[in-house]
Length: 134
Image (cartoon, rainbow, N blue to C red; front, top):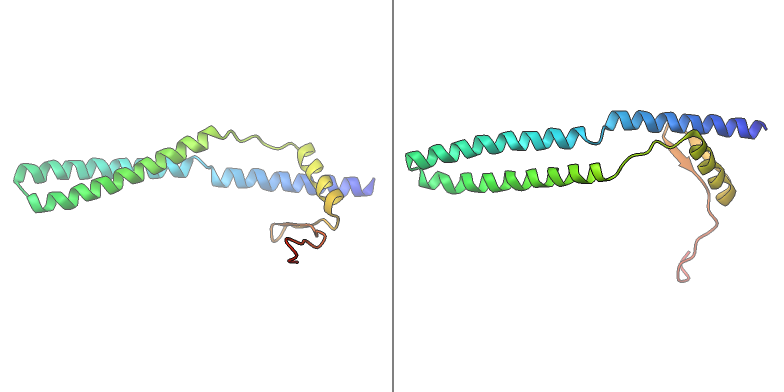
């Protein structure tokens, strides 16, 4: 019984740490910020290209077109990242999920240790051999 209460407290701490990390990282805010910044840069470069064309700055146009393509490619990467983030719904694991995971780890490997200060969950496996290599 004491072991179960201890495991529940560990599961609760892991659940809290996971929720805090989700709030801090907010996986959609950074790609949005970067995509918006790329868009703003593209509009500025586009306006500069228009002005260079009007004024006949032929040599500057080549460099500006390169900048435009580079920034456009960057925008496409951030938009793809946004698409990927929104295609992966994040479900908050329940306390029972965390508890079961910890129980499974301990049953399968034994020697389950959690160091909350260093953010480490550790188990010890049996020696592993792969093609006669330890």
